[in-house]
Length: 411
Image (cartoon, rainbow, N blue to C red; front, top):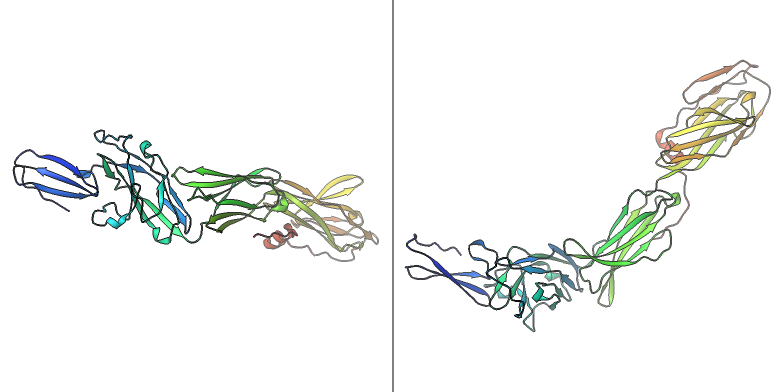
């Protein structure tokens, strides 16, 4: 309501008379009295008489309870708060200006019967207005303002409200991993779930490749909400790569439970494993034949370098680089071969494979993936070896990653 005052013709004085729902502000002048009614006790001319601290938002389950962490302060030194006088706490739905809408007052601690069943669990004499409401329903979804009523001071915080959002299903817990998940290095897995009803907090359970007994801890967050936290220390191996882990929150509601879960696929970094050298054809070959050696490995991140070695006379000699090594066989090419696969986390070595040769000497050549050819003058060749082209990138990835047989059931 806007009130236009006449031009200044004298000094003004004001007095405030508090009633249960209204503050009467009377302005005296030489003219007849002008009375301005302000809903609640919003401080006249923009002054704020009450400051509350509470969450901006609470997500609540139907049928459960909700706890609103609440505290208040009175900034005006002239409005001293007398902690020895019994003070009532009032919750107002949707709008703080309840004079014209008295049904918006859903709870008053001084009343025995209220629209919402609840109780103030905080100590009002210590400016703690924490309140618990029971048997929450979906029509509780709204914003709520807090008011105190005590003699002689009464005030509503009209600028701060808590938004209550009620749903039939709980929100998923939050699952996080601290740091890089690397084979052999312990890592912390953390799961948290909101606890709008601390009297009946959710129980957190894990589905992990290893067995352990986690502990749940109720904690208060910086935004005055509460949550349950569960943390476990887990040492992954490369066999856990791309396995699913699950954190499940079980909320007790009445005689039943409501559940929500969060799934995450592990991305484990590890050095090359299961490195394998293969030779084709595998049986003894004639001099001058074409032979292809291939190296495969499982690694994360993928292998960046393959190196081939030949063992002759007890000595190791590097003969080529690349995932494949193709050669025209000569008598001197027979022997043991193996490969090494390397990424940023280390190296994996294959077992040796035997290149067995039968037949007489011939003039042959050895070629690597770079197309370099070394000729050796021997007896005439039996045939020409066609150089194997580098594998397409996607095929290289398929060779690098072998299938890990495992089963993972998430309930």
